[in-house]
Each structure stands twice: as C-alpha cells, then as structure tokens.
Image 1 (cartoon, each protein chain N blue to C red):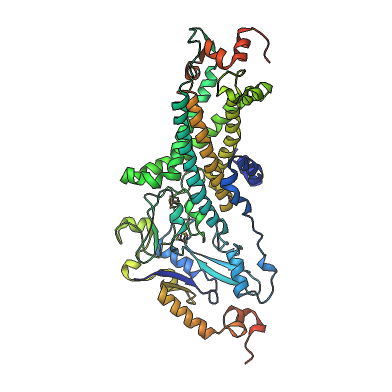
Image 2 (image 1 turned 90 degrees about the vertical axis):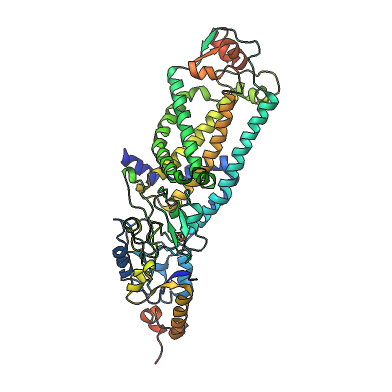
Length: 200
Length: 332
Ligand code: SF4
Ligand code: SF4
C-alpha cells in the first residue's frame, strides 16, 4: 500500500511559485486561500533557501487530534482529508498544525472564519469522486484518476516531489548521491558560496 | 468602536494582564504555557555558509522568512507552539476539566445527602422584605441564561466529539454548527450583561471585617450563623471569582471571536487555553451557586424570582442587612 508524501528539495527550489499557481488552478480554491505557499529564508541574502509547503499529511495528524467535530479522516494512502459539511471553522486545526496548512476564507461579519480549506493531495473529499459537490468544495481529485498532485507535476526544477514515500525517497537518495556533500556539493551552496565551489 | 477594540488588542499586553489571573485560578493546568517564548536567531545576520544543519535548526525554531503569499505568519515554516497547545489542551485542560466537573457534581450530591436542605429555622414569617430590584433580577437572569447557553455550547465544543458524535449521529454536524454560532454571537452579549451586572453589584461586594469573621466560622457550615450584611462572605467571594474569571473569559473570548485583527496563532492558543480553563472553573462555581441558590437553601430562590424574601430568612442569613432594613440599628 502506498504512503503518500510531499518532499521539497531545498537545494532545487527557486521560489518560482509555480506550485502555488498550479494548485490554485487545479483546485479553484476560494479567494484569499492558498493551499500551498513558498517560504524563503534569508531572502535576498547570500544563501537564501526556499521551500514549498502545504499540508504534509501527517501520520497521527495534530489537526485530527484537536478538531472539535472530528471531521478529519485519513485515506488508505495516508492522505489527510476533511469533511467541510461538519467543519465549524473554529480554527483549532490551524493552531495545532505544524505547517500552517489550514486556510480559512473569511465568511460573514467580523472576520468570522468559513469552512477550513487545505491541501487535499489532489484527492478531493468525502463526496463521490468527481461529483459536482466534490469539485466545488474540495477541488480536484487527481488521485482517483491515477495522477499525482499538480503542484509537484508542474514544478519547474522538480524540487517538489509527491508520491509514494518509497519512490520519493528513492529519487531523493539518488539525487543526494549525485550531488555529493559538504563543500563539494552542488545546489544552493554552489550557487551562492564561491568558497564552496569545486576547484576544477 | 471597532477601531478602538483593534487598538486595544494590538496594544494590549494580553499575557501581562491575564497571566497573573490565570495563575491564580489554574496554576497547575497552565504552568507549561509560561515557558512558551523562545528567542529565535535572526538568519539575516548570518553570512556565507548558512546552510544545511544551521538552516534547518532555524526553520524548526519557527524562524520566519519571506513568502509571496499574503496572510498571517505565511513566512513561518514551522509553528512551534502548536504542539504545546495541543498537548496542554488535550492532555491537561480536557481531562482535568472533566475531573473538576465530575468532582463538583459529586460533592454537591454528597452535600445534599449529608447536610440536606438549609431550612428557614423559625419557619416562614409570611412577611417579606424587598431584596432584589427588577433591574437586579433582569441582569441576573440574563447573565445566568447566557451563561448556561454558553456553557452547554462550549462544553460541546470541548468534549462533544467524544460522546455527542455517537448520540446525535447525522445531526452532530448541524448541532455543532449551531453551537458555534450561538457561542460566537451570544458571547459578546454575555460580555455586556456580565459587565453591567458586575458594575451594579460592585459596591455591595467589598470585603469587610464582618466577612472575615464569616469566613473564620466557615459561613456556619457546621452550625451557628455568623453575622452577614446584604451579601455574606461566600457570596462576595463568588462575586470576585466571577469578576476576575469573567474578565478573563470575556477578554480571551473576544480575542478568538474576532480573528480579523491580525492576532497570531500564539495569542489565540493562549487565549483558547485560558478561556477553556477559566470557563471550566466558573462552570463548577456556577453549579455550586445554582445548588445553593435553589435546592440547597430554603427561601433564597424566590428572592431572585419575585425580588421579595421572607423576613425570617433574612434574619437567619443576613441579620445585619435585616436590622438595617428594619431600621433597628446602624449597619456595621
Ligand atoms: S493540516 Fe497540518 S496537522 Fe493536519 S495533516 Fe496537514 S500538515 Fe499535518
Ligand atoms: S476549523 Fe474545521 S476542520 Fe479545523 S478544527 Fe475546526 S472544525 Fe475541525
């Protein structure tokens, strides 16, 4: 059985925000909601490093543990999904989530939160696959079509990987071996740090 | 108004005001909160060689970077305090709160079984004294009614998933939606009613020497009737618990009710824990108050309904007030 994972390779991410755009397009997310975002540490400085982050579909997910209406469920593939019909928009999942993944469209007066929206690993929600309701509430269901999340598919540098944990880690391990390590390594260090460049 | 609230929050040292109060009420439950702040190194000051382990250490410390995505804390990769909040809420506030509620109910049942009803010793005199104005009663019952609604919906939000999900089945989602709306919309109304009630009754609830003697004799729990004025020591204590607890739950409730003022997750996590913890304590207090004000003591409930109390009840429980009302001698 597959265990779905995202992995963002910090040595490759160039902060193009292609994944963010792909996600918005694939899922037609509500205004003001971004299921994925790119964060750059040291922006504009030597050694800036970027990472794309969304829901990481935690094992033993903190959001599930605090939701007052218990509306989360985990699929067989380890994807964490939730039921928007039950969600009351309390925001607890956002307080608990390590990655700031849950998003809330503003709904009604006084900044009241609407139903929580987050990355579904392009796996839709509890509604029937590819139904109108699923599309409207949760966006794409590419998993049911045998495809992987669009953000990773569209990543220009293939920094963002999505898929079964074994496959993702195989790809990453292979990369790390080619890339080398320490001062000889390719990647951000090579780009930003002349001292780190190989002598040849 | 909104602007003022916004200013008040953005400038209010929420923790500085609330933490002492919270410690008073919930020392044990919330102690781990105090250790929350953790200085974070500024990555911008680092030069070349900022990579690998150093970078990841900063990320896991919750350092904020830049993100083109707008939104509060979009630049923060790891939410450091979320884990702590979840553990305190799920493993301390929830179980201890349940024990506290259960324990309070048990004690009240035991008290009723052992001590029985506190009767009017000399029987009813048939003559009554005016004790509560219409305004007092309207305020009391508005606060009480809202409190019950907020307590029920709040407890559903805290504990509902453990038993209501099975009990209500398909109706659970709808009930919880409704609970949240009731809680969020009646909350501010409760703030207003509680504030008015506390202000109106402030003057009567200043402690004095009579109350000390009242406490020294445990309010006459084991016989005898220590002297008391309009309010006895115990009632004044409940007033002040409601005063400080009320300020705490109202302030924290508003912080969570209006998430559109840019409060960050840390603030709302703290607010949530204080709100839940103090509310649980107040619910227990309110249970005891409701017991003593109805089943536990004869002749008291009618005072809050009609405004009139029996003279013999007044003599027994509030002798100084009785004397004063009758013009017997000057109040102490
Ligand atoms: S929403 Fe957050 S806590 Fe929940 S599975 Fe996704 S990353 Fe984990
Ligand atoms: S916002 Fe919705 S999904 Fe998140 S904890 Fe609250 S009810 Fe659950």
